[in-house]
Length: 143
Image (cartoon, rainbow, N blue to C red; front, side, top):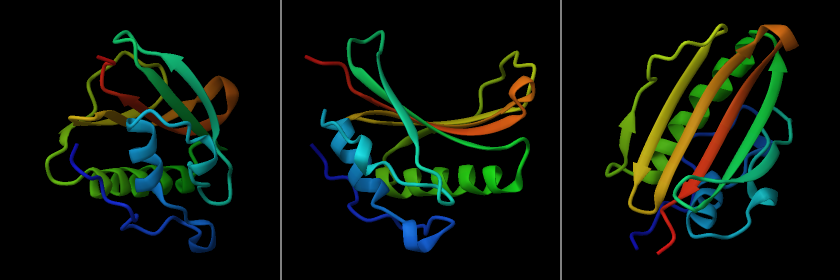
């Protein structure tokens, strides 16, 4: 298995709370439980849950809530996209935001590597008056 970078190259919005994004990605893509290793964003702890992917792998979904349409949410999304891209390296395939029928704002970046797939999204939820940044890490199918 190719090694994934072990240090984030982009500093999180609050440097004193920056953590090792790459280590968390690598650990989960290798099947470890990494909830405690998922970083805070602008001082906000992530809310994480696991789910079973169609492939049979266990995905980790983490989210960070922000005030509705806050600029900090967009900044956090862009920083996380850059961190994921840097961590996964130049061999990661990147798929931009597919066009979806979503009543609120939605942006998605998906990165694929041999070890699995990582998605980063930004979603406005008008009915909740919140904007969320989401991170999904899905290991490759279990053999």
